[in-house]
Length: 308
Image 1 (cartoon, rainbow, N blue to C red):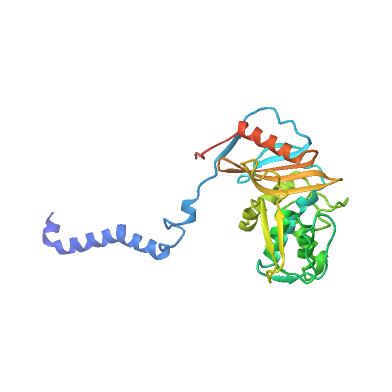
Image 2 (image 1 turned 180 degrees about the vertical axis):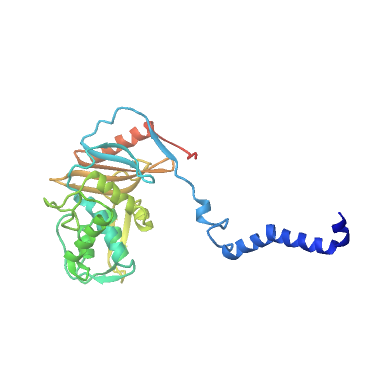
Protein backbone atom coordinates (compact mmCIF):
# COMPACT_ATOMS: atom_id res chain seq x y z
CA UNK A 1 0.00 0.00 0.00
CA UNK A 2 2.93 2.29 0.72
CA UNK A 3 4.26 1.80 -2.81
CA UNK A 4 0.86 2.59 -4.34
CA UNK A 5 0.57 5.80 -2.38
CA UNK A 6 4.01 6.97 -3.44
CA UNK A 7 3.69 6.11 -7.15
CA UNK A 8 0.02 6.13 -8.22
CA UNK A 9 0.90 7.36 -11.70
CA UNK A 10 3.23 4.41 -12.37
CA UNK A 11 0.54 2.00 -11.16
CA UNK A 12 -2.05 3.49 -13.52
CA UNK A 13 0.35 3.14 -16.47
CA UNK A 14 1.05 -0.52 -15.63
CA UNK A 15 -2.70 -1.21 -15.30
CA UNK A 16 -3.47 0.35 -18.68
CA UNK A 17 -0.74 -1.64 -20.44
CA UNK A 18 -2.03 -4.87 -18.91
CA UNK A 19 -5.62 -4.02 -19.91
CA UNK A 20 -4.65 -3.27 -23.52
CA UNK A 21 -2.68 -6.49 -23.87
CA UNK A 22 -5.45 -8.61 -22.42
CA UNK A 23 -8.45 -7.15 -24.24
CA UNK A 24 -8.09 -4.44 -26.86
CA UNK A 25 -4.93 -5.48 -28.73
CA UNK A 26 -5.98 -9.12 -29.41
CA UNK A 27 -9.35 -7.91 -30.70
CA UNK A 28 -7.69 -5.33 -32.91
CA UNK A 29 -5.28 -7.95 -34.28
CA UNK A 30 -8.12 -10.40 -35.02
CA UNK A 31 -9.98 -7.96 -37.25
CA UNK A 32 -6.78 -6.99 -38.99
CA UNK A 33 -6.15 -10.62 -39.92
CA UNK A 34 -9.79 -11.63 -40.46
CA UNK A 35 -11.72 -8.63 -41.84
CA UNK A 36 -15.51 -8.51 -41.77
CA UNK A 37 -15.86 -9.98 -45.25
CA UNK A 38 -13.87 -13.07 -44.32
CA UNK A 39 -15.15 -16.59 -43.72
CA UNK A 40 -16.20 -15.48 -40.25
CA UNK A 41 -18.64 -12.87 -41.53
CA UNK A 42 -22.26 -13.22 -40.44
CA UNK A 43 -23.26 -13.37 -44.11
CA UNK A 44 -20.84 -16.17 -44.86
CA UNK A 45 -22.22 -19.22 -46.68
CA UNK A 46 -20.14 -21.30 -44.26
CA UNK A 47 -22.02 -19.82 -41.31
CA UNK A 48 -25.37 -20.17 -43.11
CA UNK A 49 -24.78 -23.79 -44.18
CA UNK A 50 -27.55 -26.13 -43.13
CA UNK A 51 -26.94 -29.84 -42.88
CA UNK A 52 -29.39 -31.75 -45.11
CA UNK A 53 -32.28 -33.48 -43.40
CA UNK A 54 -31.74 -37.15 -42.68
CA UNK A 55 -33.84 -39.48 -44.79
CA UNK A 56 -35.61 -42.56 -43.45
CA UNK A 57 -37.69 -45.27 -45.07
CA UNK A 58 -39.95 -47.83 -43.49
CA UNK A 59 -39.13 -51.50 -43.80
CA UNK A 60 -41.95 -52.41 -46.14
CA UNK A 61 -42.43 -54.60 -49.16
CA UNK A 62 -41.04 -53.27 -52.43
CA UNK A 63 -43.55 -52.13 -55.04
CA UNK A 64 -44.48 -54.62 -57.75
CA UNK A 65 -43.18 -53.19 -61.02
CA UNK A 66 -43.00 -54.26 -64.65
CA UNK A 67 -39.20 -54.26 -64.48
CA UNK A 68 -36.41 -55.68 -62.39
CA UNK A 69 -34.13 -52.70 -63.06
CA UNK A 70 -34.90 -49.61 -61.02
CA UNK A 71 -33.58 -47.25 -58.36
CA UNK A 72 -34.87 -44.48 -56.10
CA UNK A 73 -32.47 -42.19 -54.27
CA UNK A 74 -32.33 -38.92 -52.39
CA UNK A 75 -31.03 -36.21 -54.74
CA UNK A 76 -29.23 -34.28 -51.98
CA UNK A 77 -27.49 -37.02 -50.00
CA UNK A 78 -27.34 -39.65 -52.76
CA UNK A 79 -28.76 -42.19 -50.31
CA UNK A 80 -30.32 -45.17 -52.08
CA UNK A 81 -33.84 -45.74 -50.78
CA UNK A 82 -35.04 -48.49 -53.08
CA UNK A 83 -33.34 -50.51 -55.81
CA UNK A 84 -33.28 -53.66 -57.87
CA UNK A 85 -30.26 -54.60 -59.98
CA UNK A 86 -28.79 -51.09 -59.75
CA UNK A 87 -25.51 -52.11 -61.40
CA UNK A 88 -26.88 -54.45 -64.06
CA UNK A 89 -26.11 -53.53 -67.66
CA UNK A 90 -29.03 -51.90 -69.49
CA UNK A 91 -29.44 -50.03 -72.76
CA UNK A 92 -30.24 -46.37 -71.96
CA UNK A 93 -32.10 -45.50 -75.20
CA UNK A 94 -32.97 -41.78 -75.31
CA UNK A 95 -32.08 -41.15 -71.67
CA UNK A 96 -28.66 -40.87 -73.34
CA UNK A 97 -29.71 -37.37 -74.39
CA UNK A 98 -29.39 -36.16 -70.81
CA UNK A 99 -25.61 -36.59 -71.01
CA UNK A 100 -25.71 -35.21 -74.57
CA UNK A 101 -27.31 -32.04 -73.17
CA UNK A 102 -24.79 -31.81 -70.32
CA UNK A 103 -21.90 -32.21 -72.75
CA UNK A 104 -23.25 -29.46 -75.00
CA UNK A 105 -23.76 -27.13 -72.03
CA UNK A 106 -20.22 -27.89 -70.91
CA UNK A 107 -18.45 -27.10 -74.19
CA UNK A 108 -20.66 -24.53 -75.97
CA UNK A 109 -22.13 -21.18 -74.94
CA UNK A 110 -25.93 -20.96 -74.84
CA UNK A 111 -26.17 -18.13 -77.37
CA UNK A 112 -23.71 -19.70 -79.81
CA UNK A 113 -25.31 -19.83 -83.26
CA UNK A 114 -24.91 -22.47 -85.93
CA UNK A 115 -26.35 -23.30 -89.33
CA UNK A 116 -27.90 -26.66 -90.19
CA UNK A 117 -25.63 -28.15 -92.84
CA UNK A 118 -26.91 -31.72 -92.75
CA UNK A 119 -30.36 -33.14 -92.07
CA UNK A 120 -30.73 -36.10 -89.73
CA UNK A 121 -33.74 -38.36 -90.17
CA UNK A 122 -33.18 -41.34 -87.88
CA UNK A 123 -35.71 -41.78 -85.08
CA UNK A 124 -37.76 -38.96 -83.55
CA UNK A 125 -36.85 -35.61 -85.11
CA UNK A 126 -38.00 -31.99 -84.88
CA UNK A 127 -37.35 -31.55 -88.63
CA UNK A 128 -34.52 -29.04 -88.65
CA UNK A 129 -34.13 -27.62 -92.17
CA UNK A 130 -30.99 -27.18 -94.25
CA UNK A 131 -29.75 -23.62 -93.85
CA UNK A 132 -31.77 -23.04 -90.67
CA UNK A 133 -29.91 -20.88 -88.17
CA UNK A 134 -30.42 -21.81 -84.53
CA UNK A 135 -28.64 -21.43 -81.19
CA UNK A 136 -27.35 -23.97 -78.69
CA UNK A 137 -29.98 -23.22 -76.04
CA UNK A 138 -32.80 -23.98 -78.49
CA UNK A 139 -31.22 -27.28 -79.51
CA UNK A 140 -30.68 -28.34 -75.89
CA UNK A 141 -34.29 -27.46 -75.08
CA UNK A 142 -35.58 -29.52 -78.01
CA UNK A 143 -33.35 -32.37 -76.93
CA UNK A 144 -34.65 -32.42 -73.36
CA UNK A 145 -38.35 -31.77 -74.01
CA UNK A 146 -39.07 -33.45 -77.34
CA UNK A 147 -36.12 -35.89 -77.41
CA UNK A 148 -35.23 -34.67 -80.89
CA UNK A 149 -32.58 -36.88 -82.48
CA UNK A 150 -31.70 -34.27 -85.10
CA UNK A 151 -31.03 -31.75 -82.31
CA UNK A 152 -28.69 -34.29 -80.70
CA UNK A 153 -26.92 -34.90 -84.02
CA UNK A 154 -26.54 -31.17 -84.69
CA UNK A 155 -25.01 -30.57 -81.26
CA UNK A 156 -22.59 -33.49 -81.69
CA UNK A 157 -21.65 -32.60 -85.26
CA UNK A 158 -20.90 -29.01 -84.21
CA UNK A 159 -17.87 -30.16 -82.22
CA UNK A 160 -14.56 -29.04 -83.71
CA UNK A 161 -13.59 -32.70 -84.10
CA UNK A 162 -17.02 -33.78 -85.30
CA UNK A 163 -19.24 -36.45 -83.77
CA UNK A 164 -16.31 -38.56 -82.58
CA UNK A 165 -14.93 -35.60 -80.63
CA UNK A 166 -18.30 -34.97 -79.01
CA UNK A 167 -18.66 -38.64 -78.03
CA UNK A 168 -15.24 -38.49 -76.43
CA UNK A 169 -16.43 -35.53 -74.35
CA UNK A 170 -19.54 -37.49 -73.29
CA UNK A 171 -17.43 -40.41 -72.08
CA UNK A 172 -14.99 -38.08 -70.33
CA UNK A 173 -17.84 -36.76 -68.18
CA UNK A 174 -18.86 -40.32 -67.32
CA UNK A 175 -15.27 -41.17 -66.42
CA UNK A 176 -14.79 -37.98 -64.38
CA UNK A 177 -17.74 -38.86 -62.16
CA UNK A 178 -16.77 -42.49 -61.70
CA UNK A 179 -19.48 -44.07 -63.87
CA UNK A 180 -17.52 -47.22 -64.58
CA UNK A 181 -20.47 -49.19 -65.95
CA UNK A 182 -21.37 -46.71 -68.68
CA UNK A 183 -20.17 -46.31 -72.25
CA UNK A 184 -21.57 -44.09 -75.00
CA UNK A 185 -21.11 -44.81 -78.70
CA UNK A 186 -23.75 -42.40 -80.00
CA UNK A 187 -25.44 -39.13 -79.06
CA UNK A 188 -29.14 -40.09 -79.26
CA UNK A 189 -29.47 -43.56 -77.75
CA UNK A 190 -30.05 -45.53 -80.96
CA UNK A 191 -29.41 -49.14 -80.03
CA UNK A 192 -25.86 -50.46 -80.02
CA UNK A 193 -24.41 -53.40 -78.08
CA UNK A 194 -21.52 -51.28 -76.80
CA UNK A 195 -23.78 -48.38 -75.84
CA UNK A 196 -24.83 -49.16 -72.27
CA UNK A 197 -25.27 -47.94 -68.71
CA UNK A 198 -26.95 -48.93 -65.41
CA UNK A 199 -29.86 -47.45 -63.50
CA UNK A 200 -27.41 -46.33 -60.81
CA UNK A 201 -25.15 -44.55 -63.31
CA UNK A 202 -28.16 -42.89 -64.93
CA UNK A 203 -29.26 -41.64 -61.51
CA UNK A 204 -25.84 -40.05 -61.05
CA UNK A 205 -26.08 -38.34 -64.45
CA UNK A 206 -29.47 -37.01 -63.33
CA UNK A 207 -28.01 -35.68 -60.06
CA UNK A 208 -25.39 -33.87 -62.10
CA UNK A 209 -27.95 -32.57 -64.61
CA UNK A 210 -30.28 -30.95 -62.06
CA UNK A 211 -27.41 -28.78 -60.86
CA UNK A 212 -27.86 -26.89 -64.13
CA UNK A 213 -30.62 -24.25 -63.92
CA UNK A 214 -31.16 -24.60 -67.68
CA UNK A 215 -31.83 -28.33 -67.40
CA UNK A 216 -33.91 -27.98 -64.24
CA UNK A 217 -36.26 -25.43 -65.77
CA UNK A 218 -36.44 -26.97 -69.25
CA UNK A 219 -37.45 -30.48 -68.16
CA UNK A 220 -40.51 -29.05 -66.38
CA UNK A 221 -42.00 -27.76 -69.64
CA UNK A 222 -44.93 -29.68 -71.15
CA UNK A 223 -44.55 -27.91 -74.49
CA UNK A 224 -42.22 -25.34 -76.01
CA UNK A 225 -41.90 -23.29 -79.17
CA UNK A 226 -38.46 -23.22 -80.79
CA UNK A 227 -37.72 -20.48 -83.30
CA UNK A 228 -34.77 -20.07 -85.62
CA UNK A 229 -32.53 -16.98 -85.35
CA UNK A 230 -34.40 -15.19 -88.14
CA UNK A 231 -37.80 -16.04 -86.56
CA UNK A 232 -39.08 -17.44 -89.83
CA UNK A 233 -39.26 -21.10 -88.73
CA UNK A 234 -41.16 -22.40 -85.70
CA UNK A 235 -41.07 -25.82 -84.11
CA UNK A 236 -43.99 -26.60 -81.77
CA UNK A 237 -42.77 -29.37 -79.49
CA UNK A 238 -44.62 -31.44 -76.89
CA UNK A 239 -42.81 -33.20 -74.06
CA UNK A 240 -42.35 -36.96 -74.24
CA UNK A 241 -42.82 -37.04 -70.45
CA UNK A 242 -46.45 -38.17 -70.05
CA UNK A 243 -46.39 -37.64 -66.28
CA UNK A 244 -45.86 -33.87 -66.42
CA UNK A 245 -49.02 -32.12 -65.28
CA UNK A 246 -50.60 -35.48 -64.43
CA UNK A 247 -48.56 -36.56 -61.42
CA UNK A 248 -47.95 -33.38 -59.37
CA UNK A 249 -44.74 -34.69 -57.83
CA UNK A 250 -43.03 -35.12 -61.22
CA UNK A 251 -40.80 -32.26 -62.44
CA UNK A 252 -38.82 -34.08 -65.17
CA UNK A 253 -36.49 -35.51 -66.41
CA UNK A 254 -35.98 -37.77 -69.44
CA UNK A 255 -37.68 -40.58 -71.31
CA UNK A 256 -36.23 -43.35 -73.47
CA UNK A 257 -37.44 -46.24 -75.59
CA UNK A 258 -36.14 -48.61 -78.24
CA UNK A 259 -37.37 -52.13 -79.09
CA UNK A 260 -34.15 -53.59 -77.67
CA UNK A 261 -34.00 -51.41 -74.55
CA UNK A 262 -37.69 -51.37 -73.72
CA UNK A 263 -39.01 -48.34 -71.86
CA UNK A 264 -36.89 -46.20 -69.57
CA UNK A 265 -37.58 -43.08 -67.56
CA UNK A 266 -35.51 -40.88 -65.26
CA UNK A 267 -37.87 -39.06 -62.91
CA UNK A 268 -37.32 -35.98 -60.78
CA UNK A 269 -39.75 -36.28 -57.87
CA UNK A 270 -40.61 -33.40 -55.56
CA UNK A 271 -41.92 -34.97 -52.37
CA UNK A 272 -42.95 -32.22 -49.96
CA UNK A 273 -40.01 -30.05 -50.98
CA UNK A 274 -37.49 -32.90 -50.95
CA UNK A 275 -36.13 -34.11 -54.28
CA UNK A 276 -35.85 -37.78 -55.19
CA UNK A 277 -34.52 -39.28 -58.41
CA UNK A 278 -36.03 -42.44 -59.84
CA UNK A 279 -34.83 -44.53 -62.76
CA UNK A 280 -36.66 -47.41 -64.39
CA UNK A 281 -35.24 -49.33 -67.34
CA UNK A 282 -36.24 -52.28 -69.52
CA UNK A 283 -39.81 -51.61 -68.45
CA UNK A 284 -43.00 -52.67 -70.20
CA UNK A 285 -44.75 -49.64 -68.67
CA UNK A 286 -42.22 -47.02 -67.56
CA UNK A 287 -44.75 -44.40 -66.48
CA UNK A 288 -46.92 -46.76 -64.44
CA UNK A 289 -43.79 -48.12 -62.78
CA UNK A 290 -42.71 -44.58 -61.88
CA UNK A 291 -46.14 -43.79 -60.44
CA UNK A 292 -45.93 -46.92 -58.28
CA UNK A 293 -42.51 -45.83 -57.01
CA UNK A 294 -43.90 -42.40 -56.12
CA UNK A 295 -46.88 -43.89 -54.26
CA UNK A 296 -44.53 -46.21 -52.38
CA UNK A 297 -42.29 -43.26 -51.46
CA UNK A 298 -45.24 -41.18 -50.23
CA UNK A 299 -46.15 -43.98 -47.82
CA UNK A 300 -42.69 -45.00 -46.71
CA UNK A 301 -40.16 -42.18 -47.00
CA UNK A 302 -39.80 -39.33 -44.54
CA UNK A 303 -37.17 -36.81 -43.45
CA UNK A 304 -36.08 -35.47 -40.07
CA UNK A 305 -34.09 -32.28 -39.50
CA UNK A 306 -30.42 -32.86 -38.79
CA UNK A 307 -29.51 -32.91 -35.12
CA UNK A 308 -25.79 -32.81 -34.22
